[in-house]
Length: 371
View 1 (cartoon, one colour):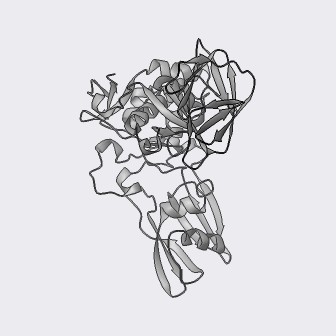
View 2 (view 1 turned 90 degrees about the vertical axis):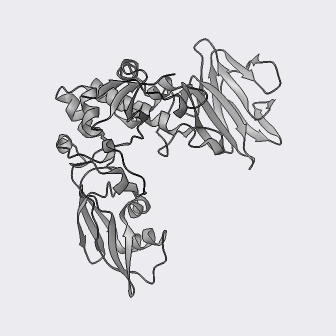
View 3 (view 1 turned 90 degrees about the horizontal axis):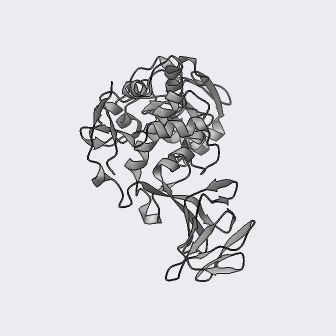
């Protein structure tokens, strides 16, 4: 079981504890906004006023500021929903304050300042199936919350905390939120994972293919990897549809992908598996190009060739064919931390979220954020 503990996390959190600023539109030429309900306009140096325009409005950059419909706005203008109002941006609805910002290149960025618990509701439906068992969603909620607190300020130089895509966590405001999602967030409110009195820097992925891997092996680095991130054998995800897969890539596509990172002396002549880590994940490939033998980072090749097709680097075989290479592997994602399919199957067998978390992060503490 994960021990209950009280972590002193305030030093690790942002100055606005309990809120997060998420970029939902970045460096765009324009954006479509539709307010629903009472929305207040708050501009620097001016008294807040109610937005009187209704329907779909176009936001565009202008010299020295922004234009919303025919209104001239300053950069850093806030649109603040009141009394349960919300604002649609593109196809998704948001209930937090929206910061409208003019970028240096005459584009615009929209940042939502959201309550972290509400932010988590907007993450869960897009990082895990919202109809999966409640205990699986609760485990995901704790890991997503821990990830959020651990990464607050990651994009501070860009003027926000996190992005709304896979560079942080996929977030779409109120879209896809159901009662299952709300219950998972509500029933784990404030809970995070810690290690030796500090917030644990957690990760998650779709399917480990039978074993999660050490965070240090996956991404390198010289700092010591804490015990909860060193990987475990995982029999639970055996029934996942991602447990086994094959993918074929033509020599020309492999050559182009490898060339993104290094200069090759000619077309590829061969490719074989090089080093593996202790969990069976391939870390390097050995390739021949012209007269040169080259060591290629497996994770970098996966990113360049397409992570959707080469689902992971837990690859068993790389079979050379006349026109390309056929890879056979298992799992989906980087393989570090929580395995989502294993989490689902543990929950279906009646295991609670605390037991699931202790399985994937052995030795970690389940704690409440001290706000």
